[in-house]
Length: 104
Image (cartoon, rainbow, N blue to C red; front, side, top):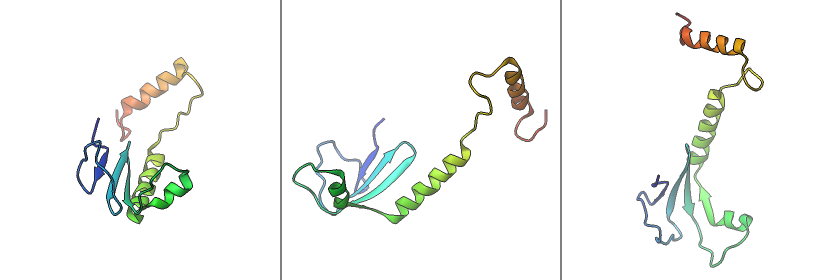
């Protein structure tokens, strides 16, 4: 599925060159990074140097932290170790039948 990158608010073609001052919005899964390109390097280099070539907005960092916490809180914990036994499956079925408010 395309559309994971936006360059200055628009969906760019693959060969579009990025220039200093451009704003990128990068979406990976549910997470979004908002990046401002500060400088362009002439050659590929190590990650610590590459990290100096762009700046992520504080709003982007805060939004990702909130989303990460929300996803962590929503993560379901499996109370069973390995494959559930017949008894475990019956308990799960009972929980599913009760519904979210506890009524049958």
